[in-house]
Length: 226
Figure 1 (cartoon, rainbow, N blue to C red):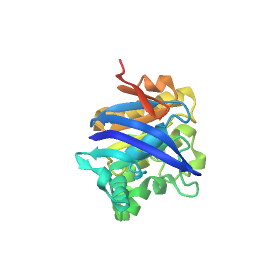
Figure 2 (cartoon, rainbow, N blue to C red; figure 1 turned 180 degrees about the vertical axis):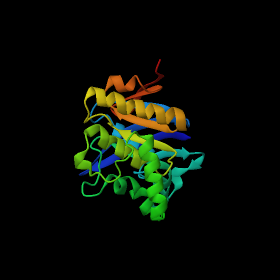
Figure 3 (cartoon, helix red, strand yellow; figure 1 turned 90 degrees about the horizontal axis):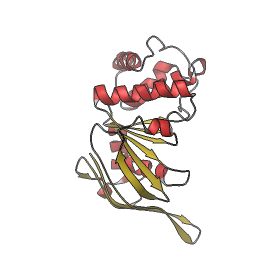
Figure 4 (cartoon, rainbow, N blue to C red; figure 1 turned 30 degrees about the vertical axis):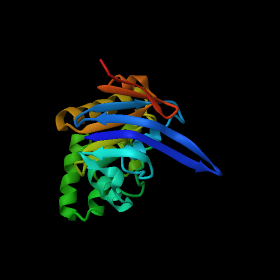
């Protein structure tokens, strides 16, 4: 599904260029649960920005379902991102003055879906993530684990081809983290959703089916997790 060939990424700092990613070659198949692990500054966030169609300024080839994404214009990246990727963040990124229903339904609202259909779909995904009946609650009234489940519901409401989870358990205690990872595994198994997690947590990595380690902008290991 995702194929990266000799991906390089540099940033300009003053008169010099800083090389962030070095010749990244990576294949991710549909239905995989992948963990990407690396130190701060290793390039992992830059890598997932490219994978998630957030960054179109890179060298090399990116094929998504055999489509040559590296040849696409910025407007095409936006369309790809909106229809194919769901994002889950460490700090949840919920809008505090909107209800759970409004937060979860935002992607469908932006897509022009009818409000009656949005309401029905929100109810369905909240059931899937274990939050039935919380449509009218505000995020501030929820625990951290519940807020992360809301963000996951928002990420999957459009039936994305894959999820990118950036430190999804970073703000949670160990028990809640385990519950969120169990939810990811359930989505992966039951819906065959491809999930790419960025994490520092070795316990989280061991729950994936594949672990990719990155250091100084290079993939230093790529192995199946037993």
